[in-house]
Amino acid sequence: MDDDSAPRVKNIVINALLESFYDILDRDGRNSILRAAGTPELMDAQLDPREYTDYEVFNKIIDAMNLLLQFSEFIAYEIGRKFAIYSDPSGNGIRAIIQNLQEWIQTGWTIEVIREDPESQEMVIKVENCPFCGTCKEAGSCGAVTCDFLRGIFSMSLEKTSRQAVACLEHDHVFTLMMDKGGETNNG
Amino acid sequence: MVKKDFVFKIAVLGSYATGKSSLISQFCEKQFKEDYKPTLGASIIAKDIVVTSEEDEFHCRLVLWDIAGQEKYENVRPMYFQGCAGAILVYDLTRIPTIREIKTKWVEDFRENASPGACFILIGNKKDLEEIRNISTEEGEELAQEINAAAFLETSAKTGENVEDAFISLVKQILVSVGQTV
Image (cartoon, rainbow over all chains, first blue to last red; front, side):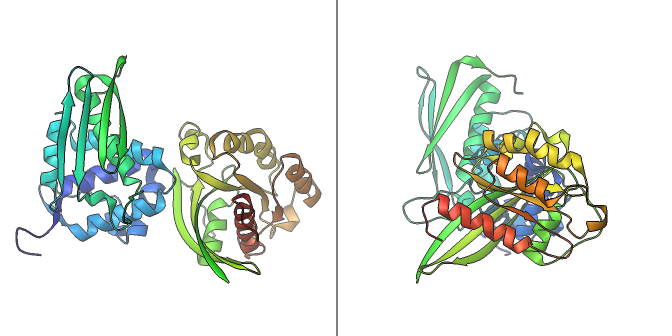
């Protein structure tokens, strides 16, 4: 894939995924996902974050995640929260991560904040053509655990700047984030 | 014959070095490795099997979670149990503490954290080490009854004896628990 429009993924995404798998599932869990993806060469790999990886590799990892983490929504959510930390260690916030994700994963998908209500402290985000759903997507309902992974990314990103606990609900790729006015976090 | 598709998450639990990884390796790949490498975190593998009854053909995808037995994973283990439809509880029939821990630790852990109604079976592994056996078959059967295990088998991950039967037995129990006639 030589032309600039070919789908590709920046290595910072792959590195953050591998680190997050390791944190939540330890070495064998991370390696299980990479083995199922058919990418064992990525075990213990640290890729140059300025470079790109073929989209096919990313897609295989996401498919393996959707296969092996079925019924493990909470784990997928926690992996997402770790991913938010590793991909944005300085805590630039949710708008920055939304912009970065679209730049890093170049597949013609969109993430858009469709509503933000400062009074109720709610934010609604819509994701279209989500690359995290992989090939498991079925007509009418997604059901991929990677939606829980995205919930984790969004909630942690918002928590890092708001310093308040954030709940995130998802329905049909629309994510509703709600800040818990009473709950403070010690993230970031 | 009616074809029905299912996906089940299954945990394999027990104290360290009881042969959990070897049982999965024997079931999935018909392999046994002599060297012992402790599992770090959870090793996960998917395996497709077909179980048949007189009327139905059940195509089951098993997502097998080989969960580390070491104490350092106490805190994360409950998270790994989420969504489990069933479990295989494993003790080593040459080491008495491993059967005690089934009762004092693993059953309770699983009941507290797995899906409601999840079923489990009990396995005494390392049947090939008969000359250094410390736990009798009767003791295993008694414990299985006491903890309400759906089945009890003695297995050898090394020779493969009863390994497939153990997994199939659990899958049949799970199918029954979701309302199927097997």
